[in-house]
Image 1 (cartoon, rainbow, N blue to C red):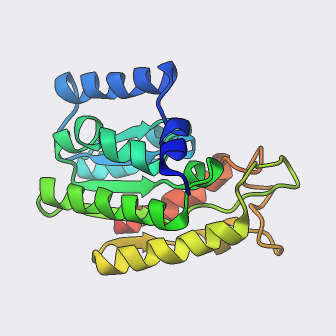
Image 2: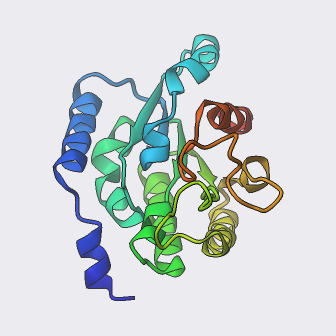
Length: 214
């Protein structure tokens, strides 16, 4: 892997910078500390979190904030982590990242190392934080081609992420079986383009995450 080329490919464009700057402003002026924060890329950005977590927030008083940026990668998330996530000292973080790294040709070890740094930084910054690390979801190339992403690589990455979670004593949620069809592809009932989740999938994801929140 040519790190310089990968880093060039993961640079933020105007949209991503705008999203990150917006999150910084919200965190600084409007957000409640001790929240639950959903962190990741476009799959997180598209999470219909207000509705799915409405009962959780009503019962606990804990708000849920979405800090997903479309196209985000593990290295760039690591860079924005403090200003867009950790500075409100969240109680829970739900982390899903890595598919775009594969999309730009990053090595699996590179992704896993960045995810471990994200977890370490979060634990160092926020005492008693509860981190829920999700497996990267499968793709379905029969619906749309997904570039360099391959389910074989995603499975290998998820093994690495599981090992990171075990080492860091962090919750790991592997939704591969729940979201896959009999051929191991992202079930067409749960994705509209072979990569991103739809409302049915978000319902499954939420039901898997909710019992792990504190």
